[in-house]
Amino acid sequence: MKKENALGRGLSTILSNEDTDITSNEISNNKLVGNISHIKLSEITTNPFQPRNYFDTQNLEELAKSIDELGIIQPITVRKLGYDRYQLISGERRFKASKIACLDKIPAYIRIANDQEMLEIALVENIQRENLNPIEIALSYQKLIKECSLTQEKCSQRVGKKRSTIANFLGLLKLPEEIQSALKTKKISMGKARALINIKNKEKQLNIFHDAIANQFSVREIEQIVKEFKDYPYKRISKNRHPNTNYLNFKTQQQIFHLNTILDNSIDIKQNKKGDGKIIIKYQSEEELKKLLNKLNNLE
Image (cartoon, rainbow, N blue to C red; front, side, top):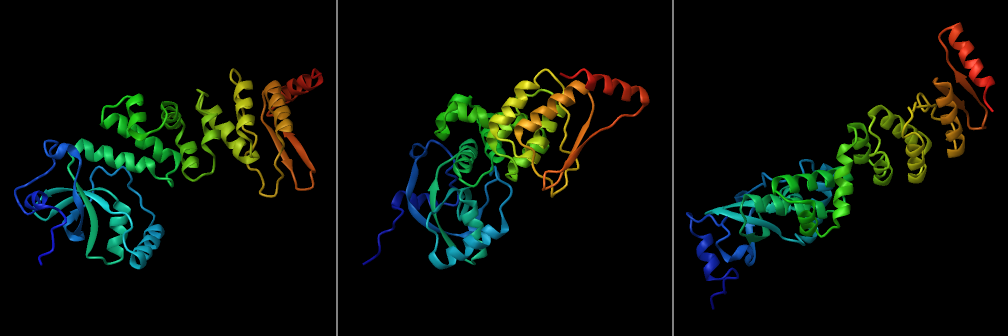
């Protein structure tokens, strides 16, 4: 008895027709067509709209070993471009890992999608990943909104997230590149980075950022510093900190900040593990020294 074709007669006809390009919304109302089909890897091209350009080599190797032992657990999704020609919509990690595992074919859903839908599907899948850093997520939201002409409200509906969540991620893109890099490498948390967004002066922003990292400030502590120095200059005091130096607690740090502001001079703090240390206030002339001494004498 001849085995029933899992794809069905209608889809089989479409897939076997070399003139067919099912990228139009006119077919099947843009729903998944047919069941899972096994497609040759050599017949699939990658998604040009893939928002993620970096794939960790070690993670791909680990996934390839898993695929070699257990097979593909979740099929990829493709669209048909013509006879024996497909384009990847989502699942590029599985696709790449399957190549490493030397598979010949891969299970795939065949879906109807135009270029904009290709981009949207890839972006939404990308955003839903759990291992993305905040900047990757923010860039995906930004691209989804821009390329698909969406409002933040429409974007929130597409990805199933609150509008405020999307706005919070997008706000991270206003931060200097150095802080964005720290977010990518998890050197600073999203909560701490967000506390720095409302600072307009880039130098002040970076100075607080470096002190926050050096002294392991909490989100609330950073928010307090931002509030106190909203209208005042902020000088970084964590420069050249020795690796063996103890972290200064927030109360001590606040006192130093205030002294720094009053004296309008750079203060260098050096403290060892035992708690011994010294405060160094630099000056460049005798006149400047006199001014510093007067300010110190007038302190209450």
